[in-house]
Image (cartoon, rainbow over all chains, first blue to last red):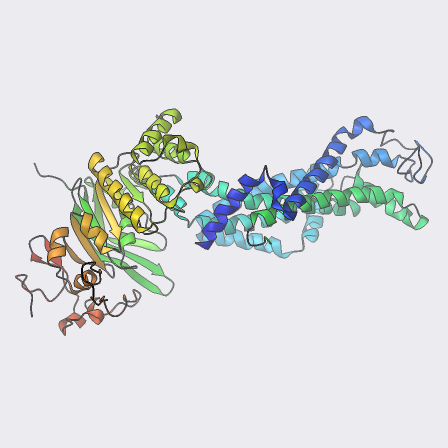
Length: 294
Length: 328
């Protein structure tokens, strides 16, 4: 009975929350601020190419390693590239990678969780075993291993991050399905002659969405950081498109010569992006989980 | 012309194979149900009422298995039907009303969508618009405003939701509706209304009704025939009037005595001593003997057969001899 109430109110909350986040207290504001940060960064990256003062990929537009000044507000790097221009457009790879990895996770983890858990029995046990085995490894280690096998590139990075997060989706979906498939409305659907895929797609899946949304936003934040990590150790996008994590990788060597601006601004952007997604995720999970409230 | 029964169940047995052993949830249950008739299934929790209801839909939950018996609906032996043909019986020929109206509707779907899906599952040629129109008519008959078809389940009260569940069960005009404790989650006043509604709809649509309840008083009032279940077996099977007038099985006697009478001011409420048997390890012989006030030697040794103590009055008890007379 308790479980039932949670599921129902989770849903009612999600539907209700869309318009009235401000009335929801701190967690509502967390979501709002997170959405503002993320959308600001997305917009900045999207319109970046048209507003950059210099060509972000062109070397020697200014002096080498010049500190922030009026002409170069964020300084220049060791190739004499303008850091402001690079910061404005440098999010694109990261956003592509994280979006793609979330999509892959969603497309594999969710159907797998739904189907395996609904079917139950040996299929469920064996799929769970495999997934748990993946889950047992530290995420970054698996990501590095997979990325090393697949090689660099946006899609490969997204895939290697996806491998790490599929278990999170699978496990959350599976646990939800286990309780929902015992609820009377799925039994009622069966008693009304519904086919098994109708039950999964129309009765179970819509009721799992709130939990998936939370996992997805947390997944976004982690994907951003993992993407930065992969690029940092040389498994990211190696060709020279402006990229925050690429700037971090190259810039940290000059920190000893006090060129703090080369890594500070891209680093700040990565932190902001991860923070934005985390705020949305944490806020959402607090809003959707009545047990965590107050 | 011989009238064929709508539902014919013959020596049905259902087992639950649990990790600690096999539970015989239903054993040796046979009965017939004519068109338009109301059958009451009474019994304690765990007596196999719901399992019996679900096995008519072949929906006994895992790890339950129907191990023996034949179930015929309209002369079709459903035990042999492939799953896809069984699906066309569920909802279309047999409607099922579940106990808990609060969780029986999908919280993310509008009421109308429930009807549309049900109707279009069984009659794919019906357009969505047409299905919604039919749903509105049904809602109107149930005393719910047709405009509310666009509301979500959580916007309705418990009683209204149960009426919607009833609407879904009768939407395709089934010949049999199984109501599994339809009013247990509701308060007494709403309970009466729901049962009256069910009764009147049954008359209008001419369907047969199986009313499952642990509340014998509800069943006595409304059912043509009554089966009293005890520990997965039929303890007594007779008409409502007969059961009220002259209960035969000691268990039924006990049940009837434990209904409080409003006209007696200083009555002592009697209860059946003991508790229902552990179904993993039921008592030898008659399953009721540890609680029976008339227990005899034979009861502990042999399972009593279901005998006709009177025409139309079956009872599973050694107290009744060959001619149906009670042995004192």
